[in-house]
Image (cartoon, rainbow, N blue to C red; front, side):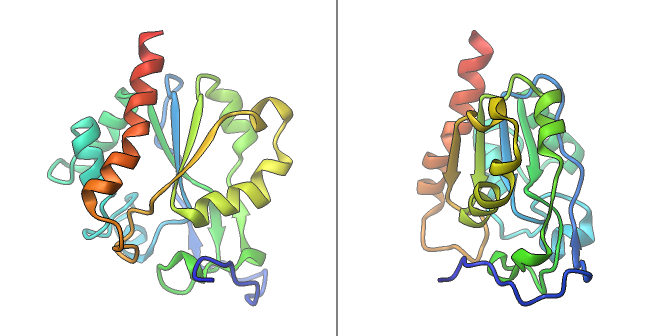
Length: 187
């Protein structure tokens, strides 16, 4: 299976280290990736690979497109009540493909602390099936009961490695993020 997690890497070797969350206490939706790829790590930016559709989709949903400086894009997400983070704080992954992440090496982010500080989050969306699988298998069982009931939604990966779905179809599926953030903002 293409997204199956490999367990062959030694636990002591950490290849990729993630970023802090992009968020504030107003967040209603949390978008989780797996771990930044090589280009993102080089740039110190979420979804730094120019062929990744993430910022194009965020441009259409929140006017946070790739033509804007990174700081402005992330601020527009925050202002739209959308938080951005990764499941992995660190993991061994040669290259940038999620299918290369060694499950045995995964160190998850501190989700109980994050969710306790962001009590308005009412939906967790995953950028691809690997992020969803890691969260379900490793994070969810360890969370306090109150946080295990937050609804989750796996969305199509925005990675250029997952080009079988058109941009418009991905955009349509990703619109749940905008719809949920906007719905909660009206309450």
